[in-house]
Image (tube, rainbow, N blue to C red):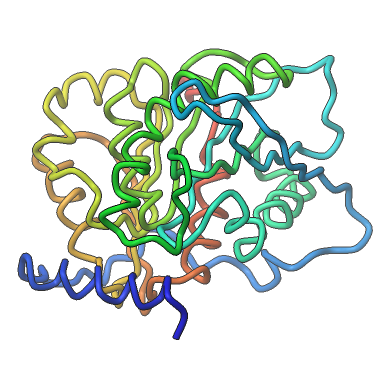
Length: 287
């Protein structure tokens, strides 16, 4: 068993002993993705996935991120941006290695089911000499520090280097597991920066629901989309369910996707990206 899996198992066990698991819901808000949604197709246009470096004043070093540009990317057009975060055992390569984000999005564009967007796949561990091999206590400050790296360094770099729309209505933040917790924490804590937020199987780094929604009226006013999802067989299911319950209590509109039989894995997270991407950057409906 790999070190990162051992750490994740330990973390799940710790989370389960910290609080009882709530009754699991069988609600299915979204259908399962169709067969082949994550398989590379022939005969369609494809986007480009590249590796870049940016200067992080937060950390004091150059840091890396992967950037996906949609098919036909042009400087003559401005694009919205999705910042898509990895889990505790990953880095800027995890989504590209295991989640096929470029393939999923290429297929959605070919079917005209998503708004063309740039996707940024950063390293959510903002620290010097900190890697996925380090202990969780050593990694935790670096994951927390990524909030400032994201806001002060990475977003300005993207908006300077690529043809993007530089406003909150054109920025989305989502992630899986640890990155799901970061996305809820940072996204809901910076509603002047992000209007679209998603937490996929969010981990115990997620702030308690009462802290996430200190001003629910602001979330109601400013959020264009809040997507919370988790597999009902995931050991961390109680985290997402707790967020959902608080959202219902505070009457904050959101999508809650419980994946029947879903575990803590990329089969679930690929499906989340498939659904989440189709909801992003849509113009509000006019009655």
